[in-house]
Length: 226
Ligand SMILES: C[S@@+](CC[C@H](N)C(=O)[O-])C[C@H]1O[C@@H](n2cnc3c(N)ncnc32)[C@H](O)[C@@H]1O
Image (tube, rainbow, N blue to C red; front, side, top):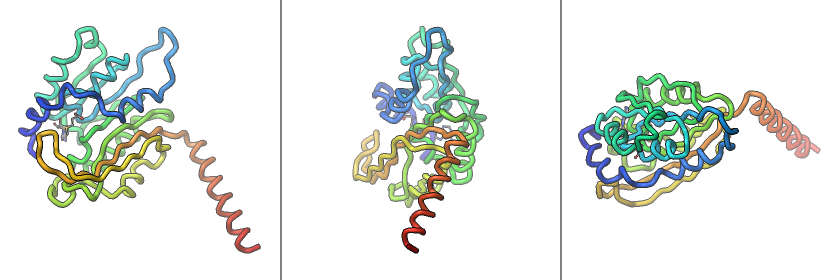
């Protein structure tokens, strides 16, 4: 996939509604008390900003990143003037972007376009940016997507590998869809799409889960022996 392809994609998709993953993640946060500072989201591979603009509409601050300047220009042009003070944009490669500490990292249909080493490293930077209670929302391609066999520069791991990148998160949404369909530009494509919302867990919550698993396994062993 070359970057020259993306401006056509923006023409078709720019005014489409935000993805359900990002709206679900935003709605999972409790209301802020009056006068509190807005929460911060980082939108990786924002394109023309369908998700970023929805977060701005909901009162968030947004750092939006995309490598294609036309996407960032479209996002800026479509953002109402009264929201611009909460929007920061970067024309940058997500693979080298220093993701700031934030409440939400959103990545809709961007991570599969990274090569495997950058993909794994970007997951590390996503985890590092989120404190307990912070969320990830995103849409990824799994290993049965057509791109997995036809696009060697893309990364479309198995669901098990994707789950391993979510170590330390509680998964709130995991929707896997496999179907023959069309890309936004009308090309036939076999999709294996994985929609995710996940919340970063505190260490003590994880330890409690680990203890419960250990207790369960002890009691199962005991039952078997008894
Ligand atoms: C399928 S579009 C998704 C855009 C937007 N998130 C959406 O859902 O409408 C993929 C986007 O990822 C961007 N992209 C691809 N590789 C990138 C990279 N390494 N760094 C930054 N952006 C990248 C493209 O420029 C494009 O805007």
